[in-house]
Length: 277
Ligand SMILES: Cc1ncc(C[n+]2csc(CCOP(=O)(O)OP(=O)(O)O)c2C)c(N)n1
Ligand SMILES: [Mg+2]
Image (cartoon, rainbow, N blue to C red; front, side, top):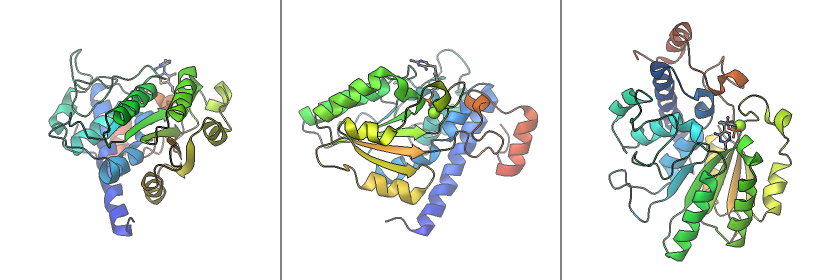
């Protein structure tokens, strides 16, 4: 059980993760900031409370795996991995600063803690299914977590994978859908409706929970009760706010791929205490 003190501490730490994401994007002048800010709470609860890993031995065979299927949100992953000790925070300075940086615009496996190259939507989820299947075959007791976008679930590959994961009874697999109602250029419902989402996953043979993706108690309860149904993969549909933490970016289509101007940065500095870039 999470105590109120622990929640306060986790939230303060997550605020630092958000700050680093904002600073990296502003410094580089590029980045999918809105998509990253919306998933920080999910990542922070997962890496702080549930995942089993050794940052000094990132290839440890029994580690839990996390795959950011919506790879464009990598600013949140980079900041989280560094804060958890996978690499030095000094690397933040290199985000998108040259072709061969370890911190590119989408995650790549050269960076400690990144399990799969992602960015092409619809694939990370399926790589995770393969890893979960391998865990069963190798009798290794690890879990695979994979985070996908709600727009990403419009990809046909997601539903082929969902079918396969249920068929292979992958109860070591946890998908999290970032249900922010937005995709690249519009609201998801305007582009192509995906509801009823919980019923769809359930009918594909998954255990389903719907949570507020910024509520630490709800996230804790959901992750703690995996697998939701014995012998089935689990999906958490997490309702989130794209751009969470930047008041003028929250739930705004244009903040899909956008960074603060000099004036906006100053405004955010006063609000959040960002400090120098
Ligand atoms: C296969 C593929 N098609 C298109 C894109 C371009 N693209 C990047 S982000 C994005 C929007 C995805 O929406 P969603 O999954 O809801 O993620 P969010 O923007 O909410 O984080 C798209 C279409 C891509 N990366 N991969
Ligand atoms: Mg979305």
